Amino acid sequence: MENRKTTLDREPISSEAIRGRQNFNQVSKGHQAMKPPLWKSAWFYGTVGLASLALIVAVTNMKPSSAYDAVRTASIDKEVVHEANNQFFSEANTTMVSKKEKAKLVTVEPEISKAEEALVESTVIETNIPSLDKDLNNEDPMIEEVPVVEVKFKEKKRFKTMPNIAGVFTGKLQIDALCSAGGLSCNNGFTVYSYDIQYYNGYGDVIERVNDDKFPPFLCNKLRTYNLNQEIMITNILAKNEEGLVERLISMRIEPIF
Amino acid sequence: MAVNPVYHQSNTKLQQEAVWIEEAKEDAERFGPLYLKYHEQIFRYVYQRMDDRELAFDVTSQVFIKALSNLHKYEFRGVPFSSWLYRIAKSELYQAFRDRKARRTVNVESIHLFEMIEDIDDDDSMIHKKKLLKCISLLKEADLQLIELRYFEKRSYREIGEILEITENNAKVRAFRALERLKKQFLK
Image (tube, rainbow over all chains, first blue to last red; front, side, top):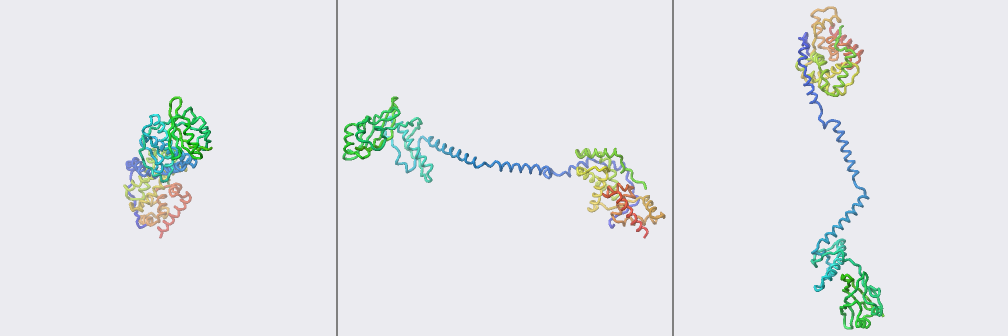
């Protein structure tokens, strides 16, 4: 061999010299240095791989079902509506109405009494709630904030007291029944004590204020003479119960017939 | 021909060695007894094949570091642990030769040469001694390994087989053929 050296009778090395060079610490350090780092070990890859797989599976399984989505959506919708209602009722100084509903706004006469004011407040709220629903559902609501009146919401003013004449609230009613009956009556223990009546008196439409629940004779004559088969409007009907609570009732539309 | 008695161990010693190995697999610090037991053998094996003493110590240390790092792969088969270490040493040696850190050296003692000459030829003159040295240096590496292991280091065929990863009979046949080639070269 070209790079081979042959040595004859080389000086032998003693066992003591060899043992003197033994160094196990050096071997241990060399072994530690040769150890692969943790991230190169199979344990590391196995553990990290399994953990990643478990995470992916967990995330995939956590996707909500369609049934859950439906329930959740319904719940969110309820929350949105509830928040909208809260926002509406919390705005005491302003009322949100659409431009289309402006004409329907109720104006409050300044001379009415405090009891009547309460009735007006209830009426305003009841008429404006539907308009809010319309505006919420409208794609082009054109909503603007219009200061109308200082309204203090009182939930307890929600009586379903209905006026009637001989059991008729609206529609056709014989003139005899209209005039001979006990006048305007209502349920819930309320008694009508005042109302406005709009009719034709031979010259034009007039509004008479009647402070009674009956139809006065002269009014019956006018109705019998000029208003058969014509609608008359009974508005601003005020009633009170035994406790003295006053309530403005819904207007009536009656067509007297012969 | 007398053989190296170090290789041959009683069953008790082999069992003790197996216990050390198992302990060292659990804790590398328990490798100490094996290191102390085989350090000199491995060093002499390495130093026999190179002329740089310091480099021989370095290679020996590297052999034990490799052994410790790969100990988990070792399986006890009823033969001394040194067989496995010799195989690692052979690998590290040739790696050192390839890296040109060390030069392949054949260290021969005169007494071994005379024994060989006796086997080859009855004449033991100095002329034959020089000629034999030259013939040895011209041997192929595989033949030289067998001559070294068998005639210079006095190892048994069983141990040679363990080191070269061949059977005992194969080691015997190969060693005979290597000697025949040396003889043919010598008598040319």
